[in-house]
Length: 390
Figure 1 (cartoon, rainbow, N blue to C red):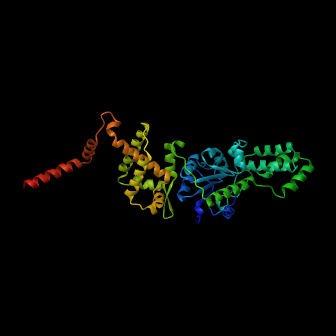
Figure 2: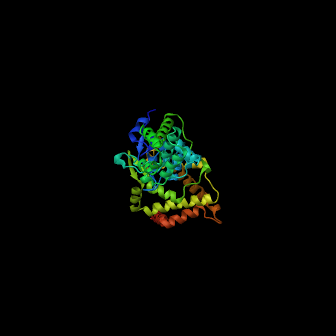
Figure 3: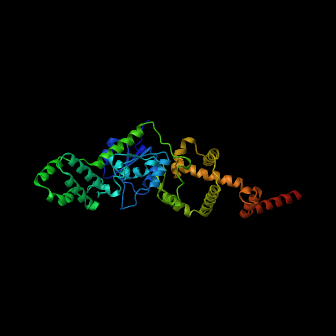
């Protein structure tokens, strides 16, 4: 089967140039991940997401909730080198796959802070080129210098301490060495210059390559991700739901439309109040049902989904495109159908849900009176009686 670049989405910045990533794998390269970017990337329907780079402080960082949503949607999730290594260590128990030595450092708690991988880099126009050196690279180079007997233990510790004492936006090899080189004997300075000038390894780059290669291998394999089911984790909170609604996109004909734009149009619609009230009633009934310990069975959810597809007249071959245009994925549709099934369950058992609850006939009469339909029927019956009398 032919692979699309969108089958593998890579969030990448200073750890590795985008053109090198594309040589490693047929992939779609996106900039360092910000909060909301993984949710938006799900609209591409990827098989795998490789998270390498992400923003730290200039903008909100990628949320754990987004990554959990990707796993729930059946997307394989790989992380390494930078933000990806940090998030992979935090979410390994949930199914995110970590790759590389930096990930292992976070997983084993040898590394504990995001400052270990932080660096200053250029903007998109200049390919996110790194302008400073991260602590993980300093530690790696110093360990190699110790192994090569270029530095002794005391000197190595002094280099790391000097790097730790610099803010990440000012941490360059020149600044680091300015602090320690004056205390080195001439032989050490000469050994270092000769060794360092031959080039040193970039650990973040090496881990980024390994992460992309591992993700590409998954794309090329027949393996699939089994999303967590049932009570594997609680449903997203109202804060997460609102945040996703603000950040998500819908896709029609390859064009992404922000959910915020759709919401603005819906809020201007003449029937916006009726739409919102219908949604609130369904959500409240579903929430009430859950508070009573009720859950729909698989048959009821499947019936609700079948009814939903029938009501929209969507053929099986068009379902993926319709979901994308609806701003939905598989788990999102399932949650919607679970709510519809619970709503139907509560309505069909209304007499037993409340003490002396309303019957189906009472509900029909009540709503007909609210909408004026009762009067219409009475008027019709009166007209029919008069017509027969004549």
